[in-house]
Image (cartoon, rainbow, N blue to C red):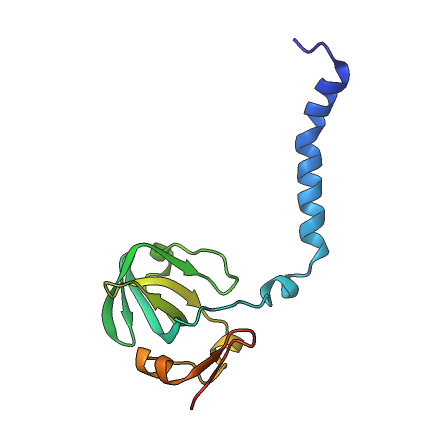
Amino acid sequence: MNRCVATSRLRATLPALAFALAAATTTLLPASAIAQAHRNFPQTALRGVIAFTSPSDATLNTKPIRLAPGARIHGVDNMLVMSGTLAGQRFAANYTLEPNGMLYEIWLLSKEEAKVEPWPQTPQQAAAWSFDYAAQKWIAR
């Protein structure tokens, strides 16, 4: 039993207020501003072409590879994507490997991100080049 009328009225209006606030904040930003968010990739990220064959399997640069347990796939909008929804699709991507050689973290690249050159495709290239983290660019020596 509610003894305070103000408290019961507040409880009744809170869900509506939360919905209105969420709707107002999402409509303030245009979709292009959300889609153009700058992503920072780690220095250990390599570039390749990934084709997903099943939820736990993929091909990386035409070679079969497995996804690590707990692998994270970031879509072009940087939201997490489930690997099962990508079966049969192919993407330019930056990726990191776990110590056992399985894919651990994958960033599906937008057209603009894929144009950033040079980006190492092998660990040997990454070891020989310099990485500017702030600019997100590699400098080939």
